[in-house]
Image (cartoon, rainbow, N blue to C red; front, side):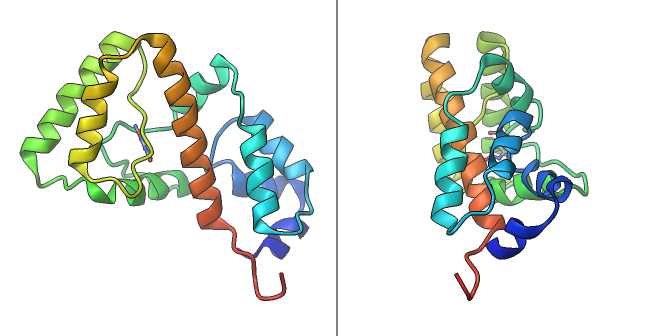
Length: 169
Ligand code: 2AL
């Protein structure tokens, strides 16, 4: 969608467009109400600013929308399609890596009480597994910072993938 279109759709439609990037209504409303944007850079800068910091409750609720790495969501929603495409580097046919990821996910959930979250786009399954094993050694406080950063990265990549500058920008 071109930025000019995003700038001009009604508020409800703009909310509907942004929500699959990051389902935190404070963030969505902040970005939607800052329209119109003169450039994609300006939109992304605002989106980044509104995503820093998150409250712990915001992180919690946003994480509920992210499936585990290695478990590609099957739903026909924009959000599920984005997650599937982000996990393109994880081959479900590679049973060894899939099993190691499943085991790591479980260990992470037991230690930190929430799903392991990583920006998967552009990362191979081996890289993700390495990051998971490294992050298992962290303290909860260290992980709080990393998880918020990964949520931001995922949201901004999704947004940049949805909105283009357009020919007249
Ligand atoms: C995800 C997801 O859905 N997209 C992404 O980049 N990472 N999930 C996750 N548990 O890290």
